[in-house]
Image 1 (cartoon, rainbow, N blue to C red):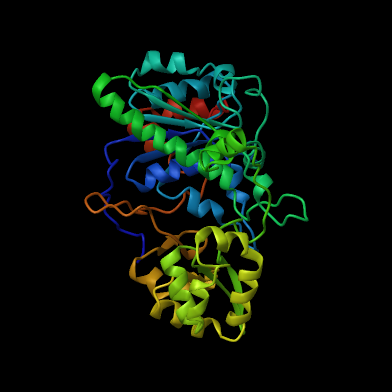
Image 2 (cartoon, rainbow, N blue to C red):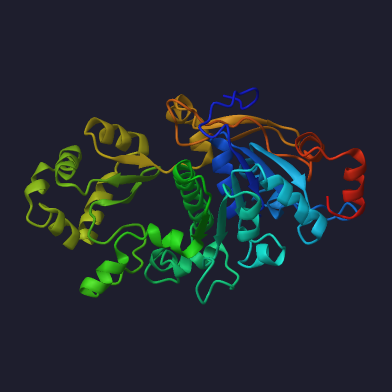
Length: 406
């Protein structure tokens, strides 16, 4: 599936979003809303004498080509505006007059410093929903501290429990703190839209990185307050959940999740060891957890006698939750990915055809989509938006350029 000439059938086709964020959290929130059909206008700082400017994400990524931008900025139009000077600030006021959502992920107080406080923006547009993503939130003693995703992951409790117990805390290979805060910002914006239908008024969505992480930390807090238990790093498994781990095969590794009683019995049958289902060391969820290390070793000795494909065939035959370790090559080659169009091809001006993840979640009545590639140039849509949408004359555009506003 390619993204070109795809109709906008998303649920948010009648909404306009102004994105003032940079790097990951704000732009990912904008990506989600854009995939769902919203018209996302991204404001980027203009370059000076052809240097600098733009969202730093334009130069982020791994490998030889820095192409993360192509994913996070799809379905967006780029305009340039210098928010540090009055002329650029006035452009924002004009843009938000008819906008539905404003996204920003600057350090708290930055909008206020730029004379763009939520209170002043709501005077212009009372229906405006303002999504503010920051490290620690807009209030509290830490609110003015600088905060990146990794800091939120540490404060929210994620980093402490990730990794091997004999090593320092690890991190995921992706920016999970940023994307969680962005996702909760998007969820909050959608809830605020529903509220606006009843009240006619917008509101502020305050999404802190550390609190977004805290939301997915399961029961770590009540476990401590109720019984004094502190979760520790446990490597590739969860303590007390067995067998559920990554096991070695002749030619690779394979994940099996057979900790539920009935599934454990089916795994015993698959292993040709049905008697283990009634072994008092393994016959209940609790006893399997108590004997987790030896049970994992037992399963691992069996899986090492099989190839990954042989093991997967047995897991399918016995209806056991399990799966291969997927990297990008496996994703691209996988028939299930293909059948559900989880990956699409997007035609880009700079890189040609790129494969990337499709819009998600799937909607039966108002499907989301990727309709346009990321803007190549900073302010690529200035004429389209400032001229056609806001009605700036050629003389006004020239004056803004001369002032360094665009």
